[in-house]
Image 1 (spheres, rainbow, N blue to C red):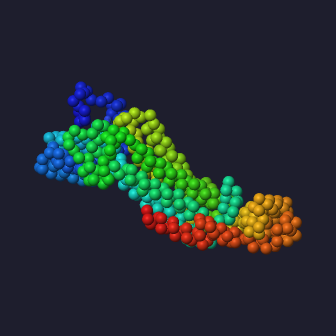
Image 2 (cartoon, protein in one colour):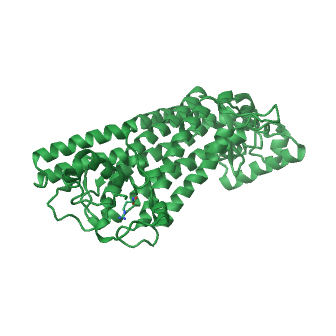
Amino acid sequence: GPLSLWGGRFAGGPADALAALSRSTHFDWRLARYDVAGSRAHARVLHRAGLLDDAELAGMLEALDRLETDVVSGAFGPGPDDEDVHTALERGLIERAGPQLGGKLRAGRSRNDQIATQVRMYLRQEARVLVAGVLDVVDSLVAQAAAHPTAVMPGRTHLQHAQPVLLAHHLLAHAWPLLRDVQRWVDWDARAATSPYGSGALAGSSLGLDPRLVAAELGFDGPTENSIDGTAARDVVAEFAFVVAMVGVDLSRLSEEIILWATKEFGFVTLDDAFSTGSSIMPQKKNPDVAELARGKAGRLVGDLTGLLTTLKGLPLAYNRDLQEDKEPVFDGVDTLGLLLPAVSGMVATLAFRTDRMAELAPQGFSLATDVAEWLVRQGVPFREAHEVAGACVRVCEEQGIELWDLTDADLAGISPHLTPAVREVLSVAGSVASRDGHGGTAPVRVQEQLERARARASSL
Ligand code: ARG
């Protein structure tokens, strides 16, 4: 019959329905190498505590090496009677080391502290991989910004034309949130770097095992301070899921703009063939599926976070089996983002911007009205009045169906005596963006500095 972890107390085996419900090897097997690493470290503290002699330690480590080789090659895998990755690997160890020696490893540890530790090891590793992927998206944005140092576009608020901005400024506005997401992972890692190993089931160990040694061997800064917290807390997992969801949302906002920009009505970008799809029925179609999938998968990533938080809400301390439900959402987040990031960075890197079209639209919708008002302020007119006057210019233009720069000297003088023909010096997009030269503004000289700072931030992370 199945090798049971709790055989002693039970007369019969589990019902098939329970076994099917309980089994997690189809998703937790990806933790197998972290489980083996934890077992090696555990064997060493058992040895230090005098619970394994030298020969037993050597035999245990040798069996664990063979087990790991077989896990990596696929020669050993979970069987139908294995409940989870820990159970399966204990079976694998006993098959290799024999029941006498293999049966000694479980002393002083529990699957509760094992799983809490392994999930942290796994997420710390995956965070590094995902950070590299996010930085690739940042690189693509920065490269496009660098390639378009003076191109302008309509800046929008409420999706309405607001003020002209540099395309590079807008692209970098998508890079900074992603850089903060990377920073979030760096900060998160400091909290993830404590090891629950040694917490046992919930109360700690009576066997004189030193969790600091295990923590150090497994790359942690130290052990968790409280064995109940060590086994019951999943905030570290939830915080990781938050960063994943936040990256998803940031990619989704970028993607939504690319989808709009690729429409006939905007006409701001052409997607590269390699990062767009066609239609099976409409021969002319070129669809932004990468961006749409990014937008769609962001919803899924938010769902992963929401599901996990909902699982945690109301759970009493310490370990409850509900906690097994932490893994699928966060694994899904890792896998989903892992697929998404290279596709989005490729899409962004290969976008062809139609800068002529963007330049044509940049001054439309009276987006230079603020420049008129600010020019008046520089002539000594109170902003309150300047705002009125510039607004009156827009009204006259709307009535006549013309743009601000089409107003005649007489039109201007008729609106306000302050409006001399010299106001036309600010009625250009280039003049408008160049004038916004305060720190963080869209003036080309500021954006160039900003680009260098974004590059420096990216390479510091
Ligand atoms: N597989 C479980 C999990 O993922 C760990 C096992 C703990 N099970 C238990 N009955 N204490 O959380």
